[in-house]
Image 1 (cartoon, rainbow, N blue to C red):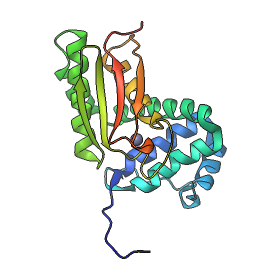
Image 2: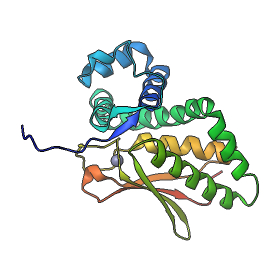
Image 3: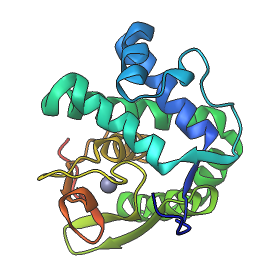
Length: 210
Ligand SMILES: [Zn+2]
């Protein structure tokens, strides 16, 4: 162990809690208990992080929960679960952050679908960057929006030969479904810090598939 001081990054308690409660809806409380054991976090069984916005849940712990999902369900299952958990987290988040949600809705009231999505993504990016140590940037080209995660709690310290940040894919899926009701977009994780890229990049096709 080195005594060199490592910088620690944190997610708000509430968000880690939402990830666990939404995982419960998907895999049941037995599933979450198994997940927490697998992640080496038995102290969280029936003892989820408190429902507040204090930045106390470390990126290390957060990514270990994600890794445990991989260990339990394999690559394919974990992708599906992580995406669903992300989508559910967004929904639960919106219902808990009514003031933020309605501010976003006011901002998005006018304009084209494309304009709304741009505003929505920028809004969520600012929100993420403000209340957590996650760092996100939004860029675009002709055909895509790019959600760029420069400091990522999902794959913190993980190694993989392909993108693993499907929780973020799910969150974006939830966010876009909320911004553009009834529309579906193709959302693809293309780069990931876990596979050695400088940042995580999730591409969203601007033209909806339905
Ligand atoms: Zn990542």
